[in-house]
Structure formats: structure tokens, C-alpha cells
Image 1 (cartoon, rainbow, N blue to C red):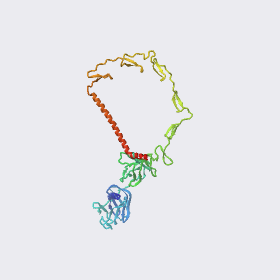
Image 2 (tube, one colour):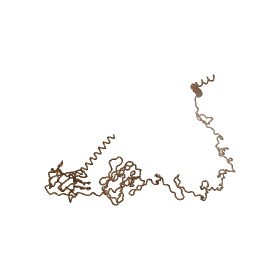
Image 3 (cartoon, rainbow, N blue to C red):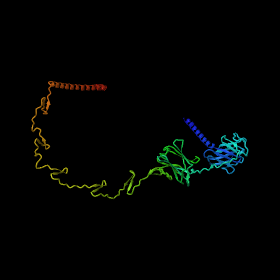
Image 4 (cartoon, helix red, strand yellow):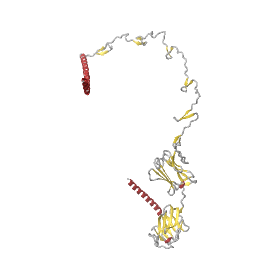
Length: 487
């Protein structure tokens, strides 16, 4: 499996390099030799503006003309000549031998006449007085029969690259408010037009590219790039993040790889290395704070909680981490009126005032046990002497009147037909007419006795079965004991 991965990655790399070379070739194929005389050489750009490091004219393996670090403007010409050209030519005998055009070290075009020593020829036999013009339709050089004007002015200078003065100074990753901070380290305003940033997140091999337009930064000022919820790009909060700062030539200026980002801690650059800080200094100079608020870095390089300070008259209780009031010695606590100081609890207790015994109102007297007023029972006429209502008598135990039940015996009404009076309850009950009722009662009594007798027999049988099981289980032990007794 590993071998297949290596092969697959190799194929991708080959395709990428091939595409890169093809793109560069397309750009340089648009730049060709257009006119040549014995003392001047003109090249033309039929494509877009092209930034180059070096354009060379080679003859007989020697560099006879060179222009470095410039921009070849689109649809324009660059002229190599002894004077009044964009680049100086050192040879005054250009039509004597083969000529090659190289851009950034790569051969892009050539001129070889029939009377020159070369393998591939693209021009007729010529003399030193001839002027050659390229026929772009046939891609060959032809001798001009008319007067020819050599053009120039297609060379432009590269704008100064200020990207070298930029520095990645702070990055906040593991947060919902992600940002990247750049600092201008130069004492003058700079443009970021030619600068760029590439960001690799996690295991992604394709970077996120950030290009600046006409953004400028003031001297020693900062530029913040926010990555909030509105942006499609985000840092990997807990994974690996690689940030590369690029110049106008797409070359690396600064690179930083950050991983293991702690929540809400920003990465800051102190000039030597990257460290995580609790202090977020967005748009300002970095401040390294290795401990969170309320803690300090002790001598053992560990974060320790700051000790709480208490106001005057209070002290810090280390167990509760609270400020307690300092008790002043020899200072007697004062209580308000109606209270006294309890020396055991050091608290003010209410003074109990014995209430004056008030007289009970008329018809009431004070109960010595409950100290409450109760109604006076009349001493003139005793409740016992008070007569009860007719039909009631006084109960000597409760001293209350109760209804007479036997005083006047009501005349009992006759029971209706089919009913007779029960002497015990004095109520009418239905007469049961059944001659065999007594026999049924007797039969029920006999059945009850028989059932009771049967129940006792069942209990006896169960006990005997239980004893038999016990005897069977322990028969060996019983026989053994009897045997010992006989001996």
C-alpha cells in the first residue's frame, strides 16, 4: 500500500512540474527574435507583460548582450544595439555566426542562416549588409528589400519590492475570532501590491493563497487579516498550520509552522521564536503573558495564583480565600438598648422583662398552672343542680345532660304481616317459613364437625410424613448411636 502511495505522489509531482514548465514555456514562446542586422537585434513580446530575471544574447557560446531584472511589456519590443537601445550589444558582426536568445537561462529562439555552421537553419544565405525580418506565418527569417525601422521601449523597471520589510508578528488560531497580524518593520510607508501569503492547514497539500492589491501599511504599523465566520477559509484550531510570506518573485521571506494551539491563546513572535500568550495584542506591539489573569510565574517557572489583598481591618483566610474582619482585643462589644452581651457566644441577646400580671376580666379567673384566664364556674348555682331539659338526665361522670332511653317506654307498634319482633334488637324481622330448617342446621353442624375432624387428620399425616423423612435422612446416625449405647 505504501509503495502505491509513493508511485501516486510521484505521478502527481511529475504532472505538476510538467504543467509548470509548460506554463513557463508558453510565456517565453511569445518572446521571439523579430529583426536582425549586423549591429542590432530586436526581440518582440506577443503575449502579456513578462517579468524576467535575465535576457541574454548568445553567439559562439559567449554572452554578447544582457538585460537583468525587468518587465517585458506586452506587444512591445526590446532593442539590443551599441547605443540608443534597451540593452547594449558587444558584437558588431551579428550576421557572421548563429545567434541564440535565452530568457532566465532557457533557450527560447535562434537565428541560423544557410551559410552558417548549425544543425537547424531558419534563414537564407546572407551577407553582412543584409537585414533580416521574421516571417511569423512561416516562422523563418527573410531578407528585407525595404528600409527597416528597429523599435524599442518595451522594457520597464520592476517596482521596488517592499515585501522584505513585512513580518508575521501574531496569529490567533484556536478561537472563533481567528486573525493573522503583519507588521511593517520599515520607517516608511510600504505597498503590499507584490506580496502574497500561502497557508497550509492540517494535511492539505493545496495552500490557501492570499494576494494583496493596493494595500499600504504605515511605518511600524500593523495589518490584520481576519478569518471569521463570513470567510470560507479558516485555520485548523487544533491541527497543524503553516504560514508562508512571499515576495514579488513568489519566493519565501518568512515561514512559520504552528501546532498545538491552546484555546483563546495567541501565537506571538518575540524576534527569536514563537510562543503562546494569554495576552492578545491585536494591532499593537506583542506582550508575552505566559499565565492567565490572576496568576503569576513563580521561581519554579510555574503559574501561581495571585494572593488576594484585603482592605484595612480585614485579613485573608487562606482556607476560604475570603477576607475576614480582624477582631480587636480588649474592645468590649456594645449592645443596643434592650439587649445584653452574652460572654459565651459574644452576641447580643434580648433582655427578658417579666410582664406584670394583669387582672382577668369579669367572669374569668387566672389558672395558676397555665397563667391564663379561664371562665369562672358559678359557685351560687352548681351545674349539678341545674335541671336538664325534659327527656334528659345529667350524667354524673361527665356532668352533662343525656337523652333518656328507658325513662318513657314507647308503646311498640305491631309488626306487619310476615314479620315478627326480635326481642334482642326490638326490631321487626321477616318470618322464615321452612319446616326443614332445623334439619338443615343440623346437617351444616355435622358437615362442619366432619370437616374439622378431617383437617386434624391431614395435619397428623403431614407431621408423620415429616418425621419419617427426618428418620430416613438421619437413620445412619441414629443406628450408630444405638450401637454405641449397647456396647
